[in-house]
Amino acid sequence: MVKDPELIKLILSKDFYYFNMREIADFIHNEPVTQNMFFGGGDRWRVIRQNLSPLFSSIKLKSMFYIIENCAKTMEATIREEMNESGTFEVKSLLTRYTIDCVGSCVFGVNTGTLGKNYDKNPFTLIAGQLFDVTSYGGFKLVTRAMWPSIFYGLGLKMFSDNVNNFFSNLLIGVFESRDHKESGRHDFVDLLLNWKQKDFLCGDSITNMKTGEKKTIQLNIDEGLIIGQCALLFAAGYETTATTTSLLLYELAKNKDVQARVIDEVDEYYKRHHGKIEFEAINEMPYLQACIDETLRFYPVLGLLTREAVEGYTLPTGLHLPKGTRIHIPVYHIHHNPKYFSEPERWLPERFYGEGKHFITPFTYMPFGEGPRVCLGKRFSKMPMYAGLLTIFKNYELELDPKTPSSYKFQPRTFVTQALGGIFLKFIPRK
Ligand code: HEM
Image (tube, rainbow, N blue to C red; front, top):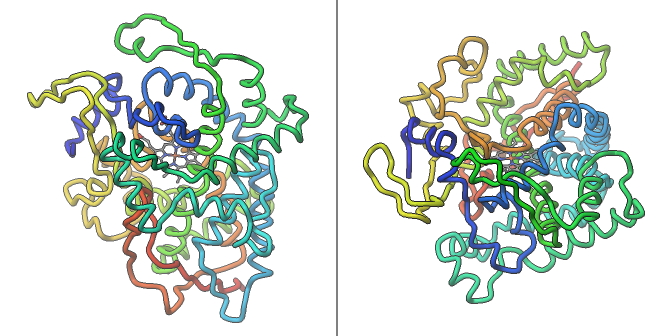
């Protein structure tokens, strides 16, 4: 466990070459969904990251924004239709339906229908439940695989059921067929995959260049695992993180009515400036809302722990030698709640990130998206569904706690992403 910001900087950023792995063991096993770059390291990770990154450029994000805006409109209609007498919604579920719809349409070009009726029987909702399996068996598999991968796979266990692998395989077959196996000109993820499929290899720089300064290039075989793995990753990383953060932010705003009032003022001013329309620029124009998002990510980091693995033996400046294969854990949750770095850490205070406040944060003590070359690839993408969703909700409603909502949350212990235990029930009060 490493807690010192200087050492964290070294591991995540300066000497990244030595710590680029998360867990390589899976690639020798035939489980396509886990063959994604999140779990991997080395040349394979670097080549995939280089080839996926163009999807997340500013121009690409801006060109996708109209899709997100449409999903937000659908959510607006869903809220209206599903509003009952009490006005109470379980917001984690509502936001999950919305973010699945955003990722489905931006990444795969399909209408998932998760915001429609019978969403609990929708195939995307069902697969989402299997990806973040919170049953006791799911928790057992997570821990066993992380600690004893050889035993785990030796026993013939798999992290994800065949259902999950087949779902993504069939999804891709369907969207490829709908595009007649040709690039459509939308330049989205599916077009990128169709382009990959026409080649035998992906090319990119070797990770050893970071150490040697050479210009060695690598060719990576394109196979089913490579394609399905990235597809499942973008789906899973895309919806769950954003839905969790946004629903916990709504909860904090319902608890802190004075902060909510300021957010609503900012929302109203935004709509006045933009003639009632949600546009891409919103993500850079609402500093107070951004401070609320930043503080929510401090208080509830989606990944409470970042993991790296030593690729080669390495001696820390403290003299401690880390043999090859040593796993290093960075306790993000603990650091975000350490009074040494954040005063009154158990209070949710957006002011820490507002105006001058954010300049006082010690580097490498605030890492909700990770840091260094492995920083979250979807960091900027995630702002689009968050802003569009929040602007849509606060245009029409104020939020209040429902009597069954607790005054604080415990977290689900059986999954590696932060999930509040029990639902987040909030009352939507129409604004006058
Ligand atoms: C609030 C939203 C999000 C949070 C808090 C979040 C957080 C994270 C964190 C902590 C990591 C690990 C970074 C590290 O090890 O240093 C990560 C990795 C990643 N995230 Fe996100 N994420 C979010 C949204 C998204 C979205 C919307 C996408 C894609 C559509 C995405 C795609 C990825 C990918 C592909 C990686 C792996 C990067 C790599 O290993 O090189 N994330 N994210």
